[in-house]
Length: 497
Ligand SMILES: *Cc1c(COP(=O)(O)O)cnc(C)c1O
Image 1 (cartoon, rainbow, N blue to C red):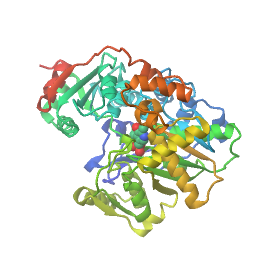
Image 2: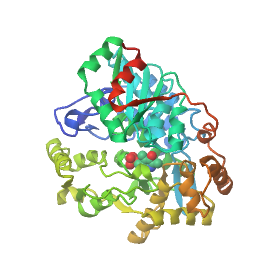
Image 3: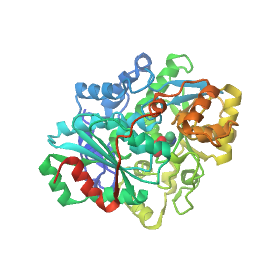
Image 4: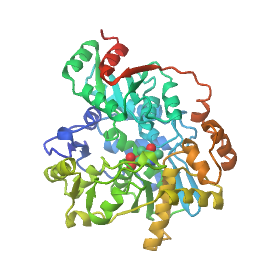
C-alpha cells in the first residue's frame, strides 16, 4: 500500500516519500508528514532475531513505500557499514538501573550520524526515481556539529557534492579541525569572515536565487539541503527505538508487549518525535520523557501548553540542545490539531510574529504520553560524576541531561519499575573538557587530545577512531571568503564561469 505525505501548513499537498525527501521543506514553510503512521508488519519474535540493517529495512519500508526493496537495502547497507565502530550499530549498555542506547558509534561520534549516514543514499535514489538528471549539490551553513556529520555522510557518495560554510571564528578548534581535514573528492569546506547568521543567510539566499539555479541547471547541478526537518532524516531515527526494544526482548529483560519508557535529550524535537512515531507504529512505549537543558522551552510547553521562545538564550555544556525553536515540534502540533493544516499554520504564524502560541485544552489532553523536565548545569555535571563513581560508566553532557531528568521523572511519578531506555546522543570523548571537569579532573592547560587520553584511562574505553584520525590529519580545505562572495565560491567549486 502506498503511503503519501502532506504538508503541515497546506492540506492540498500530496507527494510520495521520495518527492518529500527531494524537496525537504513543504509549501508555505511547512513540514512533510505521512498521512498516517503505518503499523509494524513483523512480529517481535522476528524482530528479536534481526540485525540493525534488517530492522531498518522492516521499519523504513513502511514509510518509504515508493522505494523498491533493492533500492532501500542498498541505501541501508551503504549507510550502516564499517563507518560504525560496532556491528550492532546502536548498542545498549546497562548502567545504574537503566539501559543506555548508544547512538554515537558513527563517523562523528554523535547521534546525527544515524540519519546523516543514510540521507545521501536516500536522496540519490529519490533523484533517480524522479528522473532528476542533475547532480545534487548539498549546501549547508553550520555552527559546528551538523556540518561535519553532513560532510561525513556525503563524502564520496556518487552523484552528490557537498559545500559547507562555517563562521571563521565561530566554531571550536576541534570542530574546525574535523571539518578542514574532511576527506572525499566531492567535499568542500569554506570559512567565512562573519558569524553563523551571515553564513546561514548566505545559504538561504542561494537556495532562492532563480538566476543561480538556472546557471547550475545548465551545468548539470541542483541544490538540495540536508536540513534536520527532512523526512529522510526522521524516518531512519525510528529504527533504533524498534531495534532497542527488540534487543531488550531478545535478552529477556522485558516480556512480550511489556511497556518501556524512553528518555530523550531534546533540542529540535526530531529524535523524540521519532520515538513518538515508533510508539504509533505499535511499539509498546509507556512514557516519552523529554529532557531539556536550561533552555527549557519544551519543559514549559508540556507543563503549561504555551510555547514561548521569548526568553534569554543560554549557552550550556550540551550545546546541541541550546535551541529555542524546536522545528520538529510542528509535526506533533499538526497531529494534535487533528491534522488540521490551517489551525497549525495559524499557530506557526503566531510563533513567527510574536514568538509564542498556546494550544487548546483538547490538544493538551493528547500529550499525556509525554513527560517534560530539565537539568541545570550543576545537575548535569553532578549526574556524570555520580554515575561514573557508582558504575565506572562515563556519559556526555547531553546524555547526562537525560539521565538527570529520568531521576526527576521517577521521583515525580513514583514509576520506578518500568524498564527505561535513556538515549545516549554523544560520545563523552566529543565533550572531553566538560566531562573531565565533571568527573573530578581538570582541563587546565591540556589539549583536547591529552584530555581524550586521560578520559580513555579513566573510563577504561578506547579512544574512538574519529578522534584518533584527527591527530596529524592534513588540512584539505583552506578557502576563506567574505559572506558576499559565497555564490562566487560555489560557482568556482562547480566549475561554472
Ligand atoms: C542534535 C542533538 C541532540 C538533539 O536532538 P534533536 O533531534 O534536535 O532533539 C541531542 N544531543 C546531541 C549530541 C545532538 O547532536
